[in-house]
Amino acid sequence: MNIKLTGLLVGLLMCNMMTGNIVQAKGWVIGGNLGVATGDDARSSLSNQLNDNGINTTVNSSGSSRAGWQLFTAYQFTAALGVEVAYVDLGEVDVSFTGSASSIDAFISSIDNIGSDTAQGFRLSATYHYELAEKLKLQGRLGVFRWDNEYIYYGDSIIKKFKNSGSDISFGLALEHVLTDSVSANLAWDHYVLDSETANLFSLGLSYRFQ
Image (cartoon, rainbow, N blue to C red):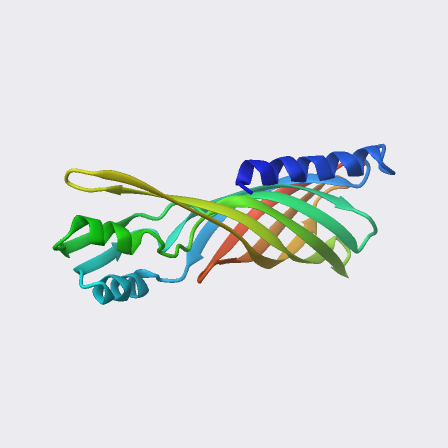
């Protein structure tokens, strides 16, 4: 199943909800967040992986902290319980290699299945809201992140593209401040598992609730 099919299935799910017992916009929320994504430092594990294959090289990364964002739509079944669908982009990471390899084929084979602490994809989450005070809420979410990432290797005489994908758990917290009856601001933290790596997104966002 690729990410386009996942998006189609999510869309069908949302349409089914809308055409079932939900026939009006009330209860729906749309919004977006922008922030900083961080991840595990995979340089040492990648260096070890290359060295185990007899390739003497040094790995450098320039994306341990980078811009990330998400767009989401949500529906509240009750004041406390809801569901949320989001498209998440955890930013771009640049990795460079210095050293020598006796065989370019061996080098490419070694990096074919490397882990990554960045990805893009759809997240489907169950949400729970707890009112801390008037106009101040704490949201918790737990869900599944269907992710996809891509690498492009640029060598002296070769360009090779690698792709990876998976479905893993995600969870997060958000502090939501109600500005008006329709508009809220939030401060959020989301944690993502990407195979053997992890990533976090710290973000600020705005949402609009249909009345």
